[in-house]
Amino acid sequence: MVVVDLNDQSFFYDVMSLTGEFLPGEEIREKPGTFEENSKDTLISVILLENEAVVSSKGLVEKENIEGLQRREVKSAIKRALYRILSKQTGRKLPWGTLSGIRPIKLISSYLSEGLSSETIEDKLFNEYYISNEKVKKGLEIACLEKELLESADLSRGYSLYIGIPFCPSVCLYCSFSSYPVKRYRNVTGEYVSALSKEIAETVKFLKDHPIDTIYIGGGTPTALSQDELNTLFDALSNAFPLSDVKELTVEAGRPDSITREKLSVLKKYGVSRISINPQTMNDETLKRIGRAHSADSVRKAFCLSREAGCTNINCDIIAGLPGEGEREYQNTAKEIMKLSPESLTVHCLARKRASRLTQEWDEYKDSAFKVTESALSIFSDLSKELLMRPYYLYRQKNIAGNLENTGYALKNRACLYNVLIMEEKQPIIALGAGGVSKLLTGKKPMRLPNPKDPLLYIEGIEDIIRKKKEGLVHTGWL
Image (spheres, helix red, strand yellow):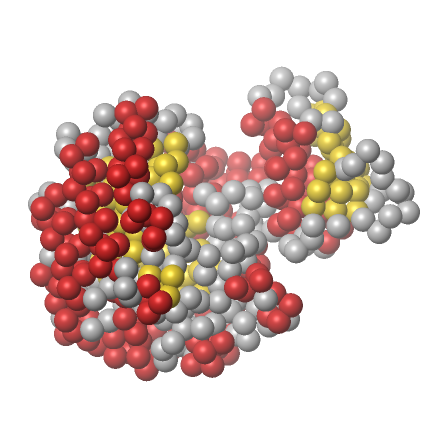
């Protein structure tokens, strides 16, 4: 256990987050009234004096001058001193240095907006945040490309729509999303789509004076719905506004065992411009282990079927750090994905989510999961280069394997604009359906409007959900 002693408790979360990056799995808590010096627990002390931040642990002391600094700058100073101590104690350096948030590209983008040169930005990231040279260059490349992509969106008046379908063929080992086994809920999926259609129709009335840029239908697995249910959903969308006006329409067809020729024809009929088929791995033993009821061969067949249906922009998600996988398995996945030749590739590092089965059964998997290194991840980076893709968005997660990141790669003109908009928080995201969380821009921190996660509660409360969404939009001044 790590015990943190601060004389300003408002910085506890920042200290806890960075400590957790160095010591994953350790319990971190604030110091109680007393602390036994001979305790096995590690004590980290952070004392803010008038002009100085003093951080100490296990006989090591680091100091930072904080005279005249704003709170955000004081936080950075504390984290630098803490980083130096933890790096000495563990013998580790973190790829992303003192940055423990999920949006490192946002910082780089802010520097670009200030007109700083690439050289100045690289220097600040390396010397002020201790970010590795490799990550600095990667982050800068992505920030520059994101800036180009965002030029096509209406950032002052526009919005994007997220539609959540909370059903899957089965729930994966690592999943913490709002996802329910579709077989168990088949008797309510029709009611769910009806409630969702109502939320679409009513919500769009509030937004008629704002242009829509992108629609992202995720979940769960939207293609877990039947062909008729998909038709009903898209009818509701096409009645709400002309789908031809939408710059990008993405559907997560993530599970190959949910894809049929008939469902693909529905997506084609309504002009879906991008789909995602997500193998996660192309190793059958791992697929069984993580609870995905399909094989690598079914991924290949679903991909072939999608091409026959006219899909010209397909993304593939893969995950590094799954139980039992190492470089040999990554090489096999990369080889098989290369044969499929998708237009974009999203490479995730496994993250332990509190609500996932992986966390609940951690003792069973702790010795075989999370084995991700920079060299292992480079296998997928090399794959993206072979496919002629560029990295276009990046984010990190709490408890992510190897202290690394998730990266989206895409061919030119095939990047997902919605991914950039939601990650960089440049535009309101109006979320519909169970588990959807709308994000309305209100200055520094977006206002969040969550829908119920449970599909039954969503169906029962649809009238109240619509009312609260309108009230939230009015409250933020967007209506």
